[in-house]
Amino acid sequence: MSTTIDEEDAAPDSSAQALHQRVLEMIGQQIISGELGPGERLTLERIQQDHGISRTLARDTMRVLESMNLVYSRRRVGIVVQACEEWNVYDPKVIRWRLASAAHAEQYANLTELRIAVEPIAAAGAARRAGVAERRRLVTLAQSLRRLGEAGDLEAFLAIDIEFHQLLLRSCGNEMFRALDGVVAEVLTSRTRQGLMPFSPRPEALQAHEDVAVAVACGDARTAEEAMHRILEEVRTAIGLR
Image 1 (cartoon, rainbow, N blue to C red):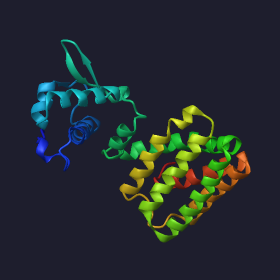
Image 2: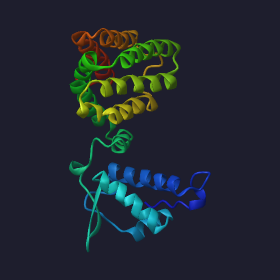
Image 3: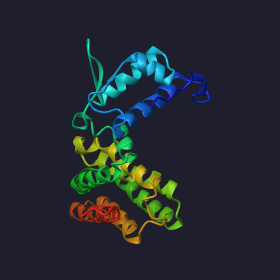
Image 4: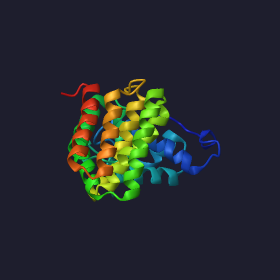
């Protein structure tokens, strides 16, 4: 199925960047969904025709997709769609597209298992290594989460929840964990956008966030790790992961 986008129909400012992002989203989702299957060959000419864009934008789009390992290009071969085993599964856009696909349940399960493996250890690391300002900020964020959660303001809750979990990853002292902050942001966002969050977050989850923050602020690594496990156990139960 081809979809044509005229440059006049892009973002209100008709910027090339806005058009590039729209085409990137379309082709990326087609690959993730399997509409464009492994081994299928693309050409810049086909992309230009299908989406009504310039050759420059088509080339830029393919470069981004290649950086995600969704496609590869070879001289005399062209642009070829990669099998899912080759995809950069930690790329935030790839995660977003997979969470929006028919295989979203499996993706949620995989990401939750990743979070269970990483975030409790990151919370313990933050308790040992976070700076004074970071510790104070975590406590403030946890208090905001309780207020917004009890009010049922899920959009504002989401923004604070993302900041809370990203701050833990960034302050834990492990650069490998820190690199996962975009992954966590995507899964938290998707859970809210797809209606998988309760209208009012569960009291035990709100309490666990506060317990993590207080434990980090006090330098109690063991309690921080245990409290983060409780947060993720709630997520695990909510998505039906055994």
